[in-house]
Length: 171
Image 1 (spheres, rainbow, N blue to C red):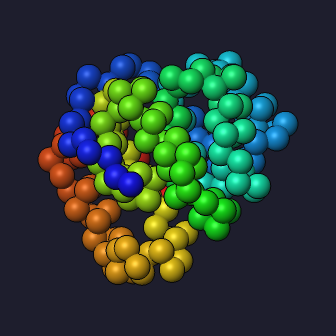
Image 2 (cartoon, rainbow, N blue to C red; image 1 turned 90 degrees about the horizontal axis):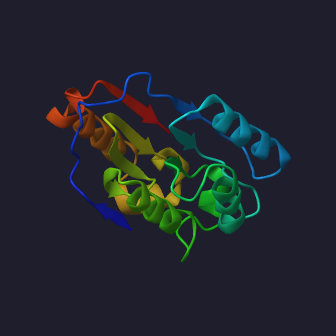
């Protein structure tokens, strides 16, 4: 599934805009503490590059985020090796939840959701890629790592990306 937006870089990124990074979290007590710290420190968005949980429970993962940060909090993620094996692409799985969250928070994204995605949110441009985790899926959809790297290079060379105050690659 893919996003249908065009990337629009917003040069009006807020001063002191704070982005939290979290990875390899699961959704147990440690993850709760991380989310509480993100809230306490006032981060305005999160990038989470993979290993969201280890039991294929996207609803529990999202419920934890929603309970602490809120359902409209800008929380962007890519699958890690655990999610790709356990249904990132399933109905109402992580990919569907990422698409719904992006729409709720008003980010502009294009590309395959969470796999090769370029987004803009409040002036920050970020590339979400997890193609290196996709193993057989990688070759079937994208022709392997050469096309994956080409996608990244093309997205990072876009005028909208180059004009952004900050650009982050998360994979």
